[in-house]
Length: 244
Image (cartoon, rainbow, N blue to C red; front, side, top):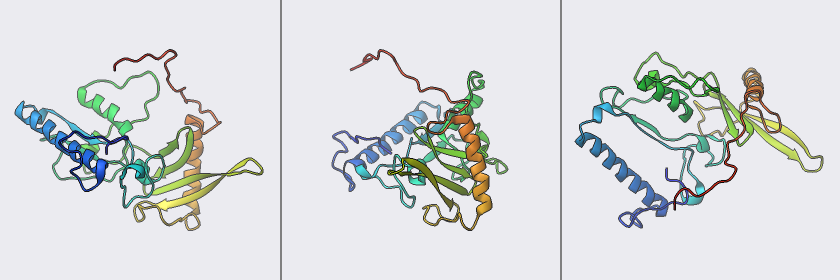
């Protein structure tokens, strides 16, 4: 998925049926083919792990589509969070297989560290987990994540455990200035588009996920509430341009 603002070279500009966004997608497709061809010609194809992914769902503003998922870039709906994730490593990753286990780009660091024979940095807490068992075709492997927490900036907005996803939708009373949280529960296995709220039918699931939400707040914080392991955002005091 190309990032905004979309752009493409003269070879692809105006060639697709989906405007500038489609042009950029077609050029990315061509560029990926060039990379794979180079690996083959250099004789290192079977020694190279290739990962094709994205950082967030597509934006509606630039013509992207996340169908059948709901939501777009900038939201914690599945359409704003799920991304393509294609892994290629001839002889190491089984061809033509797919998994629907929960995994994230935060898992790439510990996974790459394992494959390179390196240790994950001991300083600080690493949220990612080694997902090589999932990628290598281990049929007994499962997601290493008990739960996944959806944050928007510093706000915890949703929790997912296996098939269940609980949204914590913040609602502010402008008159009273008070914030309340409205709950919405979805079964992502049968309703990936997040259309049917099931919180009334599954109060036990709601209770379990709310308990995990409290654990996340304790660890990572939530809005004005600071977490025990929450680290300040990095910044440069006197930034300078590194390149033109």
